[in-house]
Amino acid sequence: MPEVPHYEHAAETTMQLDWVDLPVIDIAVAETEGREALALTVRKAMTDFGFFSVVNHGLTPEHTSRMFDIADVPFSQVDEVTKREYAADIKGTGSYEGYKLREYWHISGGVRDQIEHYNINRDITKREHPPALRPYLSEIEAFARFNHEKVLYTLLRLFARGMELPEDALVDLHKFDSQSETSVRFMKYYPRDETAEETTRSVWLKGHTESDIGTVTILWSQPVAALQILGRDDRWIWVRYVPNGLVINAGDALEFLSGGLYKATIHRVVQPPEDQRAKTRLGMFYFCFADDNVKLAPLLASPVLQRGGVKRRFADEDAPTMEEWRKGLTRSYGRSKLVKVGEKSRHEQEMVAGIVVRHFN
Image (tube, rainbow, N blue to C red; front, side):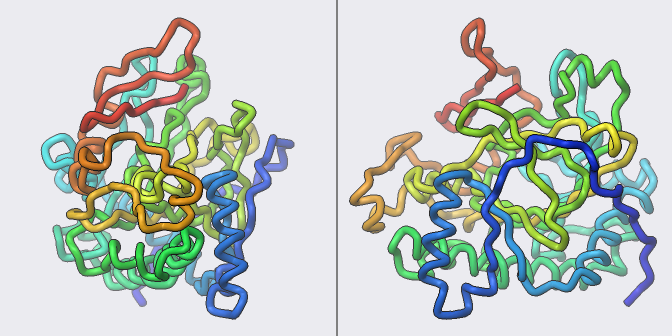
């Protein structure tokens, strides 16, 4: 394998934070007779939190470390001029494929984001990539297939079992070779100055579900604490680092398909604790989308939905396709003028494809 510069993560924080006690799922159990019980555990995690951690996924710590090294290449080994050459036409195409450069999104009070990310469709041939990244494309392609076939498909089968549907009911909507925006995303957060922190109340990415447009987000856990979820008691609580683990959450499309059973949980990214504040935060994701032509209406054949009822965000006949939903959200996210809801409300909203989309600050 070609050599790659090593990215050194910050040490874990020693600060006492209000950590959420997320369920930890041993995904290897899905290949045993314990998968029925595991499906119920996953269903409870998704209905209680919308988030859970995964261990024993099958990638070694050494392999994960190398992938993080590769994840830093599009940021540390590519100059600014080349980054602009490979920037995504987000507004024009409704796609993040390529670079999302810093200061593209508005956070609040005139402060723009300090986040770069580079998206690579799991079909790595869809577009050209910066020269510095090309030696690693075969590894990125293998990483995408691992996420898709070993992690995503296992989770989708568990989700389907939790809805008492045929095991491949959701897998069949996420074919690896179909037209879809499912992508590997490398993402780097850079420290901000104190003025920006004060203006935004230390929020780096507003509370949202809608940047998770798809069905499932697979986050490869890294040690810089910054991710928070909104608890049922309306408090923001921190998501803990899991060495060589994954953090899984439902996206909007899965909430739609599951009739509200698997609810997309509001989450945000904030300034890290003091002992990690000067460090960059490198993220590695697999953002999963249903096939572009899938209509995001509830899977009403589910006995669980038939017994418990369906929570709809729109009439079934008005359900957007996956392509319509992702393009609408991608084009507007962080760019549209938001409307504040009430004088004392903590959230703003916009309309996308006839659906109310909320942003929490």
